[in-house]
Length: 235
View 1: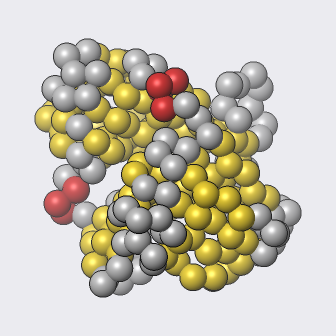
View 2 (view 1 turned 45 degrees about the vertical axis):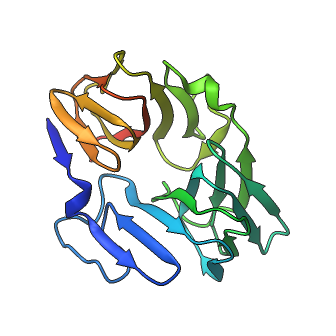
């Protein structure tokens, strides 16, 4: 089963310093039919102006992944971490029993990043942080493993999260195709971050998404297309 999500119909949060597309209910956008997709609770596509950002605030019992698309994201937290990441790089924070953090754009250009929240498989884990500076070219023409379950066996993914979820990124060059299998008992949420592509026969543009359940799909790029997919146990 496949369901397409047009970014023009997503929730939206527009402020003087922040422009967000909400894939799921968040902040002032509430849709009782669009709370989550399995363990995937939040994907916010955030544009943050230079010198602005999310000041220190708390989280608990949530797995949070930030995927930088453009600009520079600077993270700070109550565990003493402070790091800055750029295009194609990823940070992970397990809020666990509780953590305070901030996310800012301290650069001179607009910051765009995906903020992803995943419901953990249990509560009370110790807080944790990590970041990974993936080479952008390593995702061209393939699904680059970004994150996987802590209980998973052999996996190239360096980020381990507390949920049966796998996260991949790819760039499919114009005129090329790339398949993605979604096996029995599994589902996936695929975001077309940049570009234009046909996915399972439907034309998508940047920021559109696809919910896929127990069905293999193929991405056929009309333009160079940058994608992220979150694959998980079926809801």
